[in-house]
Image 1 (cartoon, rainbow, N blue to C red):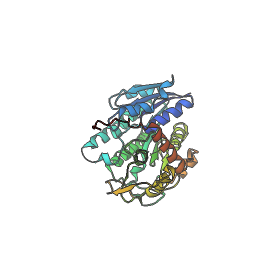
Image 2 (cartoon, rainbow, N blue to C red):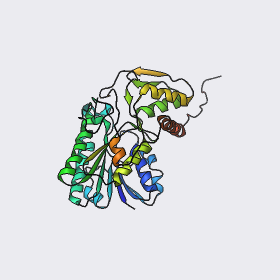
Image 3 (tube, helix red, strand yellow):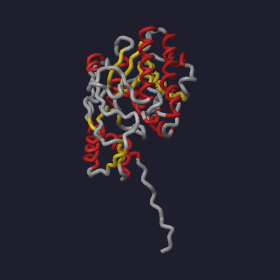
Length: 327
């Protein structure tokens, strides 16, 4: 049984990773600062199952301010998923939050890892946003990064720190480039969550752009399986892996799948493309398949069905109100 540290433990992917580690018999120390990008009660609900385990402990705090050395010392493997998410929110005055949570917190942990010096594994959750509009699809890990958003720049900077500490400080790091993760507990600002909530609520679906943009959508359980594999695999320090769902699908095609699941046509309305939104993404996952023994297993239709069911289950109907008008 390993002792695992999971940062961002109450988040979308982090909470699923915590559940998987506990199910495998590991002890988990979760850290989360419960920042205000969405409701703290939703994040706490993500940990409802984990809180029933004696092997789970939650520490609330900002990683930049916490004693990183103590966190690292009591852990065998560190899964660093915490960060300030979102492409669109990274423009403008909020950028300092991205440098703080994505770059500063990562460097703080890596310094503690270097001082520990005992071969602990450090798994960093990077993003396909580091590629931007990649020149080749599917994109390999050795492609030149061209981020199109401040968010992508900070994720790339933290990823470079992992490689640097791996090569120069012998820190046992691995970086995972996640491609468009979706599934139950997805953040409320993400596309599939918004689409599913609009379907359940009977509202129009708002799409940024014409919907022809494509993504390598990856189901959260597949991401967790790869992240677990990276945490315990014997690979060289500083290695980087793409994690994608197995093929690019347009947003319009995904909406067609949701319409079939909903059993009715959807009221889709298109708006302007948002700054930082790339045209297409696609992951070459040959390295992860060969070195981590990982293959994505969830078809898009099955994953979307699971997310739509989750949104339906958590939806609270409005109470019936008596009319106050005179009869």
